[in-house]
Amino acid sequence: SSPWLKVYTRSGEGKLSIHAHGVMFATAAELLAVLREVDLLPQWNRYCDTASVLKSTSQKELWAVAGVRLPWPVPPQTLRVHAKLGVDRKRRRAIVAAARSPQIDEPSIPSDASIPRDLLGRLELPVE
Image (cartoon, rainbow, N blue to C red):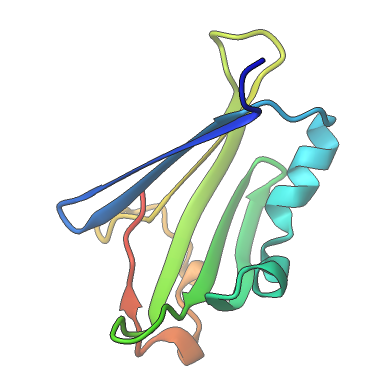
């Protein structure tokens, strides 16, 4: 039997890339609920001191932000992502969740998805 979750990471060009592939025995509604529980991140991730959904544009798309505090000497950081949920066309009955940092010149960033004031002084950590 194979592991139920594989996580791959890559960094370079000032970006952190994370790819997770796994099998979850859950309904689509249960997976959506987990993705939307961003505000619970600080309860189980000791390096996250705050997190919230900034804007939900549909059942399958949202903007979220998290405050990250890693051990010294890494300064406090902000992680903002635009996440979408879709169907994997290669595999039947598979759901794909993709999240990445919005690009600075991205015209689709909603004005109410900006970084909260209490996180503005932190470095923004780009993720793809």
